[in-house]
Structures are given as structure tokens and as C-alpha cells.
Length: 512
Image (cartoon, helix red, strand yellow):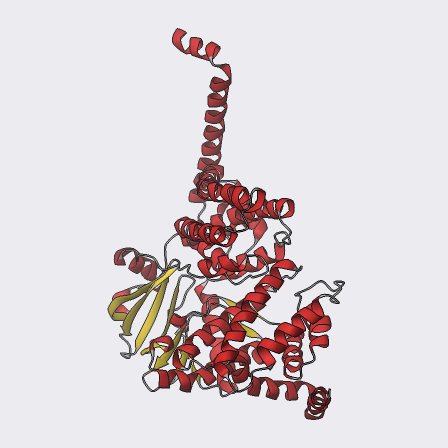
């Protein structure tokens, strides 16, 4: 005791800090223990008025904040992990690219930073991986050299043991021996994994997607912390850069969409809706049937579709089905108003009879009627080369620029880019492809220089178009996404504005 008093007298600041830190940790632990004990004692926490006892099924910021505020030790520990992983990166970014930039090394340093950021996001888990994937399609927020590096992010992970996954299925559906046979693992990702099985009732093959246990808890905490990180990024960008600050709507859109992926009954409803909407429009695309009696919050059972990835097919198959993919893409965007928001090569299959198949409907975005009509007008103005209306009206209606922004300086710049790269194709399609690539880089630079803000749904549109074009180019090096989209866009424009109005607009531009 005498020895301890001596240390306290000799090192009062260190001692006070240790005592204070220990007290805070002890208090946080006690608060969390009490909360977890209350939750364990409750027969049905969701019936309680205390939001700290249970996590919501649908995204609600206030509810998540209340839940994790009652668990300060876990929250602080995870926050410390995130800060430990990201703080050195942000410090280096500020030092090398903001305070003391070297113009000759800027691009190289941006690529190095993005590479390290990609590694850190992968370590931090699925929420941060998905956030990085969203940033990889935001040229208004991220410099062009960093975009390509972030686009390499992947959320594939090692599967959890079968006994754990099967226990989740058993808790949701009941006795598996009475329902399925020949179950085997076929795929795994950050939120869940997929088994192939046969129904004992009729022998039909099905795909059973099961959620990882406790993923809602870890996922919701990281969403909360990502909001905190977003606030710091907001402060950082407002202080050190000319970029627009972090947008709350961007975070809310990401959080709401990502959290909805945890509800497999919501995914089932999306899948049923798309299957119906595409069927009544006679779009030749397969959407697997959902077995609603074998679908719960953490398990979804669908028709098993035998096939291969479109991207892995022979060139002749790709060339045959890409027009169907373009029609599928534009039908969602301009007609249905619901958009498959997680496009990647694994979600586009070719069945054994040569039909295109769309999978995985956990993340879907809504495109309201106003935006659908604005997009159609934008395409019409592109076709008719009415760049004045495109820049002064369409991009504002879609939310790319503030309504009060003066586009005088921007009009000639965008008109030149679009005219040279999109409209003046000539007969040399290889040269056109080169121009389109140049446009992509120039547009990225424009987004970064001007106060552009890509609407969340449009960022996903860009991602979908990029996927289609990438697959198509592997089959046909001369493929042109604009040329392939024009027939459907014209039909949609005629349906919306009328044949005579569309003819007059086209004739007026031709005369001009």
C-alpha cells in the first residue's frame, strides 16, 4: 500500500489517467451487463417498450442508436478497432495528398492509398466492404485513380461450419430431415451462405440461403460506427478539400438498403415482384420461384437454377444474350421503377436452355415516376443532341446539380465531351470505344471539379451499365452500350411523350 501511494505521488498525471480509464471501463461494463441481463430475463424483448433490448427488423437510426448506447463497452471497443485501422491511413492522406502534395506523384500516391484502404476495409468486415463498393461508383466523391482500386473489393469469405448454419435453418424452418435431402454447401459470402438440396415432398431441387448467426448485431453496430466515421469525413472534407461534404442522404440510402439485406422475407418479396413484373412485360428472363412456406427472416428457399455465369459463356452466347440484358436493365430503370441494385457477374446466369437468369434480390432500389420520366427525357435529349436542355434541365431534375447552379460554364464543356465521345461515332467503332473511355475519365474529372452529387440510385445504374458493357465487350470488342440501348429508349420515349412529339424533337435537332 505504501508503495502504491509512492507511485501515485511521483506520477500523478499517469496515475489519475489510469484510475479514470479503469473507472470508465468498469462503468461501461456494468451498464452493458445490466442491459444484457434485462434482455435475457425478458421472455419476448420485442414486446418491451425498451428499445435497448432488441434490434429492429427494418432500419431505424434512433432505434440502433438507443440499442448500442446501452452497450458502451462493445461499442467503444469496436470503435477503437475501426480508428486503429483507419486513422493511420487518413493521417497519411492528409500529409501526402492535402498538406504537402507532390504533383508528380499524386496519382501514384492516390493509387497506393486506395490499395491500403481496400485492404483495411476488407479487414473491418462486410459493412465497410459494402461502403467501399459504394464509393467505387461515386466519381463525385473519389478521384479517378482511386476508383479502379476500390472496385476490386470483394465480400467473399470463408463459410461457417455446416453444423452452425444448419442450426439456423432448423430454428427457422423446423426438422430438416422432414424437409430436405442431399444438402450440400455451394457458395459463401459475408452475410450468408447457400446450400443446394432436394425437397422431400416432390424431389424438386432448391437453393437455400441461410444468414450467418448474429450477423444483424455486428452489422448494425458497424452501420452505427460508419455514421460516426462519416461525420468525421464530413468535417475533414469541409476543412481540407473542395469536395462537397458527406451527405446524410447518401449514408441513409446506403444504411437502409444494406440493412434490408438482412431480412430474407423482404428479399423474397422483391424476388416475387420482379418475377411478376418481368413476366407480364414478356421480358425473356428467368427469375427463380420462391418457396414462401420455406422462407423466414434468416432463410430463403428458391427454385434451383442450373446454369453458368454469363461472363464465362462462349462469345456467341454472350452476343446473343446481351441485348436481352440491356432490355432487362432498361425495363427495370424506365418502366418498372424497381431496380436490382447488386449487379455483379455471379447474379447473371445462362440456363441450360440458353435463357438469361437474374439472381439475388436482397438489395433493390426504387426509382420513382418523376426520376423515370426525367431519365427518359435525358435519353431523348442525348439521342436528339439537345445538350442545352440536357445540361440546364435534366441533370438538375435528376439531382446531379443544385437547382440554382449556373451551368453557363459547364454547358460547352459537357457538350463537347458528349458530342465527340458519344454522338460522333462514324464507322470506326474501335475509335469510338477509345473515345468512350476518354469520356469516362473526363467525366470523372468534371464530377470532381464541379458540385456534382450523383443520386444514390444513379450510382447503381452506372454500376449496372458497367457490368453489362464489361461482359458484352468480352464477346464483342466493338459492342456499344449507347447503340444497344437506343431502340428500347426510343420506344419508351414514344410511349411517354407520344410519337409526334418525339418525331418533332428529332426533326428539329436534325435541321439544327
